[in-house]
Length: 172
Image (tube, rainbow, N blue to C red; front, side):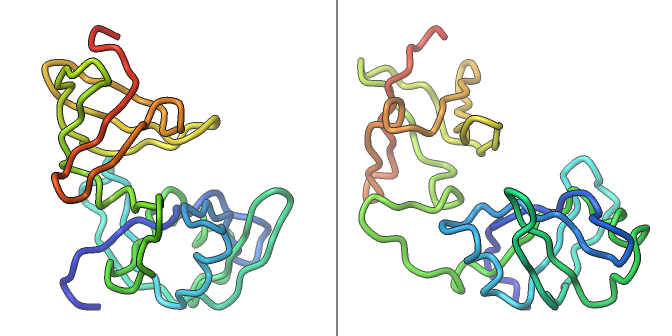
């Protein structure tokens, strides 16, 4: 793949069974959109600085319980699958469909200035974290703020000025 900007669209979870299947966490909406891309770039988590990014070909995917499992080319047994646990699934940004209406790609919001509804500058959107309840936007400034990405807390996004407005106290 080219050296264009890549976006995380999912993450590989634990091995499933003994034939190389892996649980998959999709960050796409709907979740099965992740499987429309047949070539993924896998990147080890940031904690694994020695790991190299590599391409992977998706062979098949299917629903399993309340999630998804997938099989990748060259991954044929549990130990090989287990070595991929935690890897980020990336695709080239230009392969993503355009965001419509109130939709936004998280990666596009990184670097946006974040102010609260009282007008206080909280900092800059640094990254996002997925929690069991919902995604959280991590804003770094004089202090770090973890703001839930919900309509209650994320009030508006202005792509032109690269600003987000949040309902979040400055001292929380």
